[in-house]
Length: 364
Image (cartoon, rainbow, N blue to C red; front, side):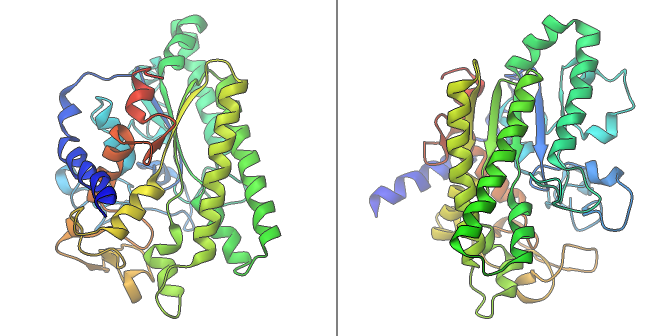
């Protein structure tokens, strides 16, 4: 028991200290963010169509500065914002679609970075509707890279990008899409699906490497079968094991693939931050980590508040900091803060083969 307590206490201490880095100067030139709703800070606000997943309405953003919904699937900041804070930035870089036409913006000179993440997207082009898949996000970065190179020379751009951080947080939506087509897959079907996902994930990383990326900060997939939405579908309200098994399989595949890439591609460095380990810790020791509710969402409706999203008419909890989940699928501001602290400063349990701080500081 004592052996399990230490990492938990360390987690609490890191969360308390997480804002100390706020005043520090940025530790990398820029941060480029790719992924899904775990990382989206408003790109989907700019996409047309009713099918687009959005969070640009209350009660989202109720704890964001000025209490405004920004497109983040959170009551406040998301994990990317807190990781950016740890690196000395104010919060996540702006969404690509908010600045794409503002070519005079300093971020196109590589001084800030860009967030390309799109809620509902995945590793596969077929995942999600009317959103920006990972392949398209990489293409958008290529436009930014060309823009930077044309302004400060190719050599200077290569230098800036090689020291910048490339954060990827994706994969959960691919698993949900697969499960919606086949809720009782065989072991062979699961293996084939995961292998295909890992292969495509690897290709996205290679494409970014060719464009100048060298430091990769990967966020793995949490135990998504325990989110309020899957629980609401289970007759006993339990976690859906198939979803968790697929998440573990993808995480292991990506871990092995990133190690392989670091051996084969000169200068490629990486860390895998385990949101999976953080969420597991919170579910196992909620009180010790400051949480009281780890099954029901703070905002939503129906069983576990997991039947629909956080809309203006949804039920909203009062004690938001007590909740692991903000809505049917996403963490609260409090959860994201703790996760970022653990991944940035934590032990090998929460980030490996080094933590994000060591990756950023080149202690590798």
